[in-house]
Length: 131
Image (cartoon, rainbow, N blue to C red):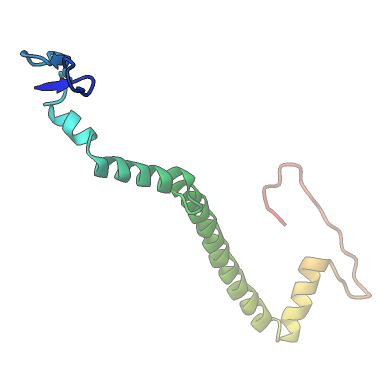
C-alpha cells in the first residue's frame, strides 16, 4: 500500500511511504477465546447493566422487595392473630349474655364481691399459674 505524504505539484518529487510487507505481530492473544467473545458482545453488557440496575439501583429493587415482603408477612401474621382474638371475644360475649356468667366473670377478673362476703387473695412464691 502506498500513499503520498504531501500532494505533488508540477515538477516536484513525491515522497512515498511503504507500509509493512509483514503483518503486525501486536495482536490480542485472547481475541479468539470463547469468553472474550462472550464478554465483548454489546448485548451482554446491556443485560449486565440492566440486571445491576434492577437489583441495586431501582426504586423497586430486589432488596426493597425483600423488606416489603417481610413487612407484608408480619402484617398477615398480625391479621390472623387478631382474627383469632376476635373469635375468642365473640365467644366470651355469647357467654356473658347469661347473668350467672356475668357474675362469675366479675368475681374472677375484677375481684367483686357481695356485701356479706370477704375476699382473700393468696399468692404463693413458686406459683406458676398466670392470672
